[in-house]
Length: 208
Image 1: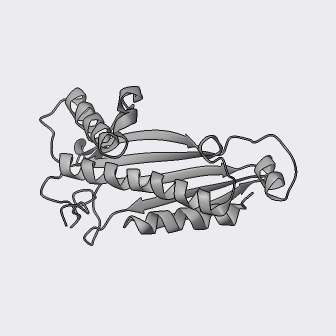
Image 2 (image 1 turned 90 degrees about the horizontal axis):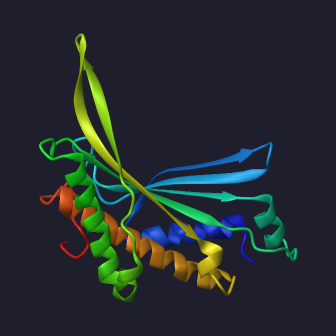
C-alpha cells in the first residue's frame, strides 16, 4: 500500500507528464477527524499576467486522506476506504455573452464528450453528460454592478481504489497518468471550444 506522500508525488509526476503546472498546493489537517486534505490547482501554459480575460481552462484536484487510509498504508488489514479524487474544471469567459446558459453548458458537455470519444471510444455509450454549473462574476461600477465574466464549472469524481487493483506505486502512477492525460485532453478541447484563437498563450498539445 502506498503512503500519502507517494500519492502526492505520483500526482505531480502525472500532471507534469502531460504539460500542466501547479499554481497552488494546499494541504491541511482537520483535527476533529484527523483527515488530511489536499487541494491542487493546475494550469496549462498561459501568458502573464493571468487575468479573467486571459485565463485558460484549468483544473482543481482534491482528495482526503483519512485515518483508515493511513492505517492501511502502515500495514493494517482493513477494508478499503474509498479514496476519491475530485477533478473540477473551470472555464472563464469574458465574451460569449450573447449565448444562453443552455448553449454554454452544451458546448462544455460536447468538449468533454469529445475527449472521452478520443481516448476511450469503447466506453462512450456508457458515458452520461457531465453536470455544469454557470456562475457570474460582477464588478461594482459606481452605484451599479456590471457583469465581468461568466464561469462554467464541472466536477467529476474518481474512486482510485475502485480502479487501482494492484495497490503498488507503479500501477498507481499509471492510473494517475491516464487520468491526467484525459484531463489534459478535456482542457485542450475546452480551450479550442471557448478560446479557438488561444487564451493566455495556450495551445493544445496536438496543435502546438
